[in-house]
Amino acid sequence: MPDPHPRKSIIHPSRLNRDFYHQDVVKLAKAILGKVFVRMDGNKRLSGMIVETEAYLGIPDKAAHTVGGRRTPRNESMWQDGGTLYVYFTYGMHHCMNIVAQQADEPVAVLIRALEPMEGKDEMYTRRKVAKKDRDLCSGPAKLCQAFNISREQDGVDLVTDSKLWIEDHNIKIPNKDIASGSRIGIQYAEEWADKPYRFWIKDHPCVSK
DNA sequence: AGAGTGATCATG
DNA sequence: ATGATCACTCTC
Image 1 (cartoon, rainbow, N blue to C red):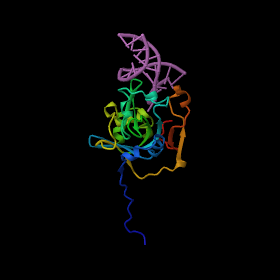
Image 2 (cartoon, rainbow, N blue to C red):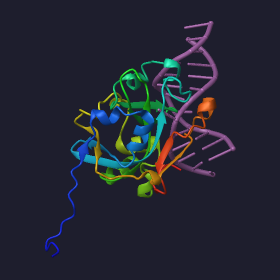
Image 3 (cartoon, protein in one colour):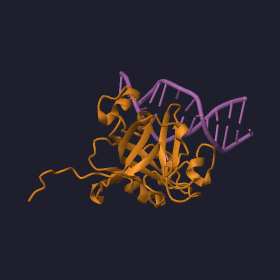
Image 4 (cartoon, chains in turn yellow, orange, blue):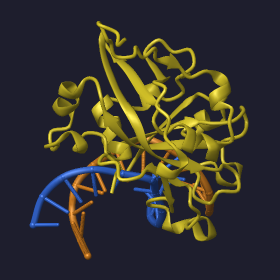
């Protein structure tokens, strides 16, 4: 006999914990696809599902900001514990955000390249004047920072404990067959590291950056 | 395909 | 102090 009062299954979003971020950076870059990035903007929730990422492998990686063990005021967050947010400013106008992986003093991180906007789209359209469709809001690493109002102020925030920024698991499983990979964008200078397949995205998803 | 834009860092 | 660079985006 069918339930006379069927309900949608209730999603209980759970915040990702420290163990999740302590994964190998390439594994994290894939595992974080389908997870939901959340920012409290005053009392408004802004959120979006992660649909495209890139892994940066740290000291040996000629495309990484920490190549050769570089440690400067700008990239200090990359040296912190897994779960730290690393936000950098570039080209005189853009911010991009990364999720630090693995352990402290292993300066590796996952660049968040695109989100599927979920909550707070009105605020995102206000900040992103050129956007015409939802897919224009967060389909690039600097676009999503503009939509979510992320800047250097958020650099170094701990996503495991912060009261305004975190990542949630909505129990959405992206099967391996739905994950595509390819070379990373904008790092042609990185010689033999330029072609490594460390960019990951959800196949055919309309909100990816290209 | 080119412009825009200024923080950042290695050099000296 | 100076200059080259830049994990990008928009418009043409």
